[in-house]
Length: 95
Length: 250
Image 1 (cartoon, rainbow over the protein chains, first blue to last red):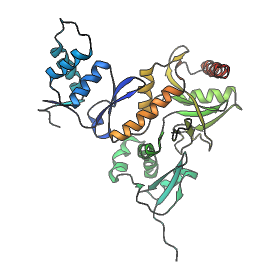
Image 2 (cartoon, chains in turn orange, purple):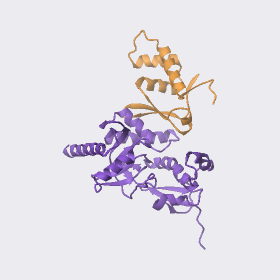
Image 3 (cartoon, rainbow over the protein chains, first blue to last red):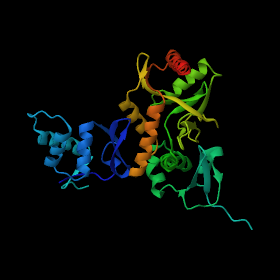
Image 4 (cartoon, chains in turn orange, red):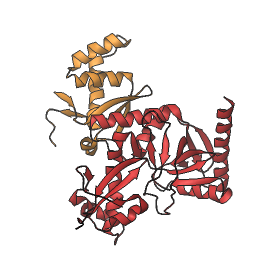
């Protein structure tokens, strides 16, 4: 189970999406991170507690994704990057 | 019989009050004319007790506790001011041609050097607002104002003057001089990093985001790679002059 770390907020400034870590979360991740449109949609899905297959469905509906791309694996890899950077928590994480 | 006042002081930033209860009796001295003793209120900023001792190791040995309290109150003050769409920004700020210009960069990058070069070249044409941390105010649809604060850096450069924000210059040290407009992403990330407020909630992030959006939308932001020499300062001055001339002609 993946969830967004409490205290992380997605904001949009002049068309750019940015993750911002509020006070409590800043010890675990960088203060800010720019996301592209795809990353922002994935983040919004995560905040709605959607699963990877559900997120993949959302992406297919919103973007032209080539058929040969393993979209669920791509999402998993992206989530791992966000996890390593401290923006996401896996259920087994303890701090 | 007069009631004895606690160590409670009110400071006004950009017209907005912040009330402090200082832990160290002489901390108010570092605030100069900003701090006026006042009655206790329910909304005082009181530095958590462990902060002064806990952060002391980050200061040179022998630093006075009052000075540590004065410095450690910066993010708390910056956060408190967000409710007024104000906050404290890390930059040397000065008035040139009627507008305020911010030289911003991490400490040690040459903000003060650029300012001092300007003073050396043209001593009568600029007035410093704050040598380290002005207050930016953008409430009620007013133009963005740059206002003084008591945090004026090692050189203690500051004046009780304010002006409309003209633009922001992000400084980089380099072996040659070049200046260009910052792109949106680097503008946004730099502004986040140079505001001294540490947002504590979704609402505070929203306010800070709105402030940054206004700055990026309303004023020029340049990246100035420079050598730190007086020649580099002449490049910067000419860039601002050219920009102002274009603004007048539009």
